[in-house]
Length: 161
Image: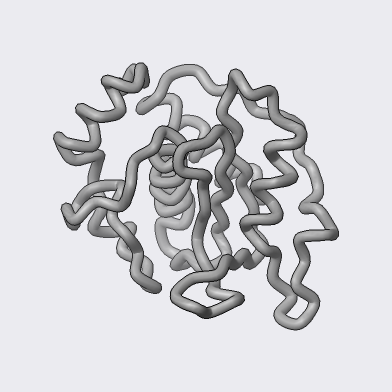
């Protein structure tokens, strides 16, 4: 992950959720690699992050590698991110993002996955961070959490700034 993206995402996340600690970089687990497509299984990454995470904190893994999950019967569906819903870990990838505004898009993927860790499902509001990508990249249309999602997160104890 380019350091400029990491710093940008860190700064943007702190504006929304408050102080965030950055851990030292780690390698993606070799067990998560799908050798047929040269992609990493996001669910396997989440299992690995769960093993190394203190359960009283949330952990967002950021990567520039291609990641995938199983969706709609497709075993290796490429995704921008994945998070346990609810849970304490999620992963966001810059691999499928546009080259313009990539750091801003990565922030939106990360905050979306963080919303899932809090138990938020996908939202129908087109400008909400929790919008389902449906196989595309709608991040340029996303502006913030909608009022319903924001209310839910505040009830869960997030101190949205």
